[in-house]
Structure formats: structure tokens, C-alpha cells
Image (tube, rainbow, N blue to C red; front, side, top):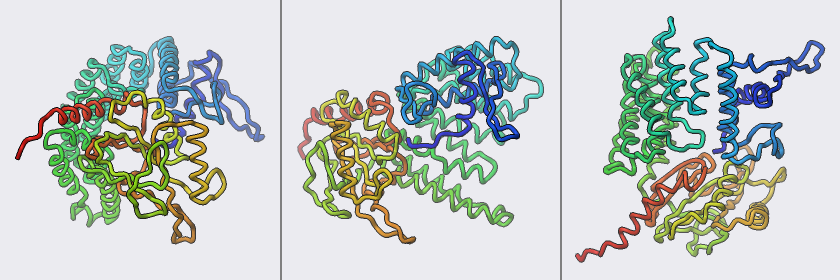
Length: 490
């Protein structure tokens, strides 16, 4: 997705990488009283385990890479994700060795060391680190709860978004069981969180039934949080999209989604006694209701027919014949023609969207018969630093995608006219399909079956094999089975 890079990660990275990746002394820049910049030597042994973890995460989670490492273009690392994964693994092994060479670490650094141990496959050592910390004299109940929660996150996390191993899934379940044994008034919010984490882990492992069940248990834990504000924030959280996605594929899943939404909306009513003490809680409730409504508007599409794709320009595909409102030359593409489609939505200045299109071009050969990859983007009203008219921007996009990138998969562009704003400006009219689907992050992908029903929804694109292979195989089986089943005479 198009997301900001966290500044703290870059700070840790700038300190950690030179020290232990190259084997030299790291330097920390500082400003001296005379306003000149000088380097303060920082050796590898001065790095903390938490600093190493921050560096590892900065590498693993950011597609943008690190200045100073080759190859870099305009300050951005151009390494493929697989290469980054190999680099992260290599560096983590060096960092683990450096920590082991120091001997005994301060107890509070053991959880961070465990994160590095897990990255290099030393699961037994990681469990030993976690247990040592929990048994440390003076460790509080809150410390133990945080340790159990972090352990679940670490053992289910994979930087390449693959499924955790069965052994690690069992370790995660063991720590969840220990968290469930803690007093519920102290651990309910943490328990809800780790259950939501497990939704993703089970889904990546192809265990949809388990993912749906533990997602519902996550919301059961939400309802046990004593403080109203934390309970309401849990109900409004973004996990609802993951949980409803796995529920939508279950028998009676749509009915379960409706019941869940009804129950969660009750959590946004402030108890009168609390509101009398603090009227600001009313504003919090209003904000949470708005956030939840945005999520609800998206997930209401699960299991229902998608709106037609509307655009003004169509490339690598026939132009649809059905006129559409909203812009000159707009046409609508119905999604009920029997084709299974993976449809991405985004815009040009979204770096993650451009990377997704690159993957789409590479992944076309993996598509089964009757399955299509398609991308839809919208104009933004400018090209580079110049304000341009819709037709000119479309020509720039056409030249970039077709002439320069030579993409061959179907894509469409919505070039809406510029409308006046309340403050006297001009903004391109929103893409009707994206507006209807409440798309607010790039790239967003939906998968529709041959009847146009939305069967999958996600933000971001890693690879076809990782993101879509499982759901597409399911839809192809459904389609082929329906073709083999003789029609029943009425």
C-alpha cells in the first residue's frame, strides 16, 4: 500500500547498518556548538537489541530500501523483495552473533533478541529468551501480558507474507492459551489483538474455518474490555475487514457478518453516566462511528455484485458499448460475462500502485483459462509539476504504460472533468466505481467471480501466487463444476 515510512525506523537503520553490516564503526551525526556537523563514533557493541530489530524491520517492511546501498535511484533502493529478504536474514544472523558475543543481556532486551532469533530460525533460543524475561524477578502482570502478546506476533510474522510453519502456529497458540489464563479485566484488549493477528496467520495457511472462528472470538474479547473507550476503539478497528473477508466464504457467512455489524455498532453508544462526567467522549463516539461506517460501506460489498467498471479510456481491451454518466465518453463494463477478474484500482503517483502493475505484467502467464487481470486508475489533474487537462494527462499515462513500459494487460483510465471546490480550486471528479466501493488506499484489489460477485478484497499486491492463487483456484473449481452440472428441468 501507499503508506508513510516511520522516522524511528530510519534513525535506527542509520545507526545500525554501518556498524554490523560492514564491520566498521558506526557514526552518529550531531551538531556541535559552532554549528558544524561532526561524527560521534558508535561501535557495534553499543547497539541495543531493540536497535537491531528496528533496523531489521526498516529493511523488511519498506519497499523503498536504504540510501547508501547499491543499486539506488533517486534515493530509493531498487532491490527485489526476495533480495531484501536474503539481506535481512544475513544481517540478522550477524546481529544475533554480536549479541551472543556480549554475554548476558539486560532482561528487558530479551524480547528484542527473541525477535532476531526467530528471524534466523532459532525458535528454541527465542522461547528461552521470552521465558527468561517472564521469570525475571520484579516482572509485572502487565509485562507478562505484553510478552505473551509479542510472542504471538513474532511467531506468526513472516516478512514475505507466507504462512507460518505448523510448529510456529502451535507456539503462537500456546502463548494465546497463557494469555487467556490471565485476568480478563487486564488482558482482554491484548487477547482480542492476538486473536485478530491469528486471523491473518490462519488465512495465509489456508485454514479459513479457523480464521473465521478466531476472528469472532477476537470480537468476543473486545466486548470484555472494561473501559468503554478502549472497547469502542476495538470494535471500530480495521480488523473488521480481515474478519468479514474470511466469514464471507463460510456457510451462512453473510448472515454472521450482519449479526456482527449489528453487535459492534452498539459499542459506539457512550454509557450515560460516563458521558455526564466527560462530554468529550461524545466526540470520540462520533469519530469512531464514522470510521466504522467507512469500513462497513466496504465490507457490505462482500458476497454481492460489484458495480460496473466505469472509465473514459480503455487500453489492451475492447471499449465497452454501454454509455455511462459522469464524464464525456465514459463507458461501463459489466462484470457478469462469466469472466473471473482480478481488478486493481490506483493512481499514478502511488508508488505501490506502479509496483503492482509491474507484478501484474509479469503474472499474466500464471492465469488460468477464463481469468483476467485488469487495472483501473484515475487522473489527478497534473503531470509532474504542471497542471494539465484530463485529455493531456491521459496521453501522458498512455505513453508511459504502453510505449515505455509496454504493458499488455487490460487497463482503463477514468479522466473525470475538473469540478470547482468550495475554496475556489479545481479537482478531478472521482471515479464512480472507486467511490461506490469506498476505495481509500492504493492499490486496492477486488476479485469477482463470473457473475460479478465480489469474492475477495485486499490492499496491496505482492505476487499472484501469494495473493490470488488460492481464491482463483476456488472460483475456477466452482465455475467448472457448475458447467458440468446438468440443468434441472422445472
